[in-house]
Image (cartoon, rainbow, N blue to C red; front, top):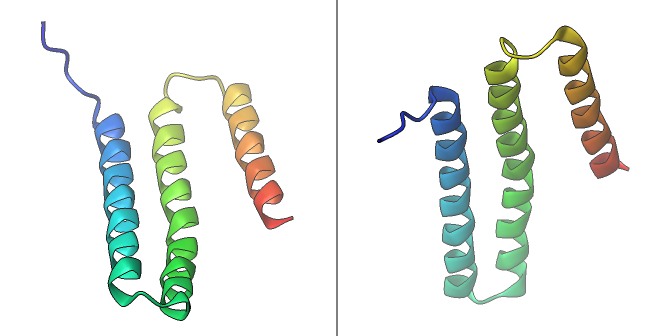
Length: 90
């Protein structure tokens, strides 16, 4: 039987596919320009996009779970995300 894909999962996967496409495109631009300076500029643009992708997928995931989990479980998940962000910033 063909199983239906949840809308939230589909949206999360679409964002990740977009992110992967951006990563591959950036790598191709790095190879095209063939200079360290340009590669660093391209890489810095990716470092801005990365957290946006992360927060978007996490927000969608938490939204999708919000009706299935207790409030306490959602707090633990959010605390986990805060710890990840703290670890990245530190």
